[in-house]
Length: 179
Image (tube, rainbow, N blue to C red; front, side, top):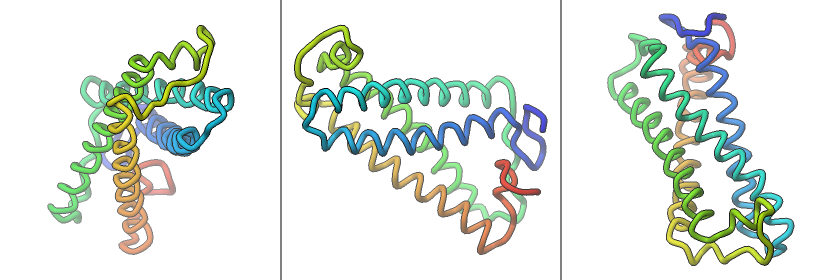
């Protein structure tokens, strides 16, 4: 499979970035909700250490994906059979997913910096973790997680609708099956 996209299929680079990011986001959501409910600071710091590292990796992958589309490759055009409203909805959901990821990364970084938790999580400091709810980026981070879940469900729902209801094999464009 070529690195760059073709007229009807995404290339190896965007496919790899997509699926790695998708799996990492699932892990981030699970670990974030798990950490939010923990009271044991040592265990919570351990989860946050992984959560923050993966979060920074997702930020880097997202920026790389944006740069890839701007400077290196072009997305395959939508199938001609796709109604205009579905093209618009797809573009909106994809754009909002990028925006949500960037806002989640920004609010996470801001929360760690403002609260001083980075020193505790990464081992340079000692003491209990701060109450993250006292810092304004925490509210945005929580709302961003809910937005990310809603957008992901819309994205996955649309993909499954195309695959199993319309049977147009749209998932093959993203490396799942033959086109």
